[in-house]
Image (cartoon, rainbow, N blue to C red; front, side, top):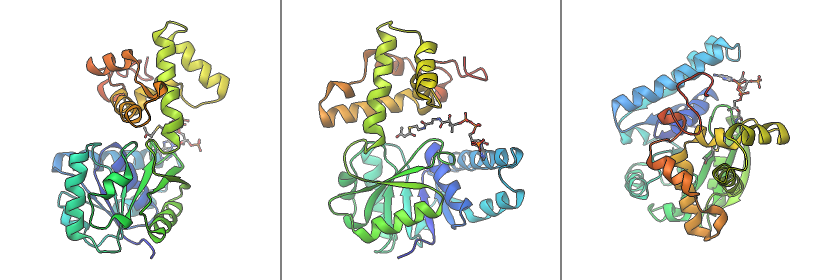
Length: 288
Ligand code: CAA
């Protein structure tokens, strides 16, 4: 089965990026948000990114127009009815996802692939919310979706190989490299990345080095594009905290335990880029 029409649920940071790369690769793509203002915001961010590409000479104006023409925004879940692949990128809340999977059961074809972009919830658990658990897989994208080349394709013990293959082929068709992984909390990337980011916060918390020295150490010493504290702000410290909690709950290993400073920053509303303040002040350009 080849994927032809794609549905994306959620037009936030990740959903808008996924919808964009799908439409940009020529797939008719329907993206659904719960309200018109949120949908408008997501679609505007897609247009802004595409325009940035045109301005940088990375994208032809005609390709931007084709991408926009391939995209249909909606607030009605029913508009996803004819899709071969649905990628959900709604909030990391099991209740919200349970309701969504129930809604999708009522309207998508039996052979449609239902994929979750969750970064830390169990795909196997999500599959129990569907009447077709064998069609449920994980497709984990990275932020910023249009620039990051990887998608983790997550199979559960029940995933049908045909569903995994169809989704993997679609990921390649949109220009991504696929890494196949089983369903273990954090998959491959976050299993390695999250303890590293938490350790960087512990190093800062213990006063071993300053913020800038920690970030420069990893940028210049290891060639990483961003230092770990900057990356935490970029991903969202609230998101990092909640992923760490889920991973700690799963593995019960100290390396996944969120450091006290991270918890306090989240409680204080210092979530990083999204709230304007984290380890960095994001009201300046570049962040200071
Ligand atoms: N349209 C098209 N191309 C664009 C563009 C646009 N709007 N904006 C930028 N680009 C291109 C640039 O032209 C440039 O291309 P070249 O390499 O060919 O020159 C490239 O994209 C990089 O852009 P910039 O030079 O503007 O920015 P940068 O070099 O600082 O890179 C970055 C930005 C790609 C985000 C880089 O800093 C990076 O890789 N950071 C790490 C991000 C990361 O680790 N993400 C994963 C987070 S974890 C996660 O997401 C998962 C989870 O579960 C939490």
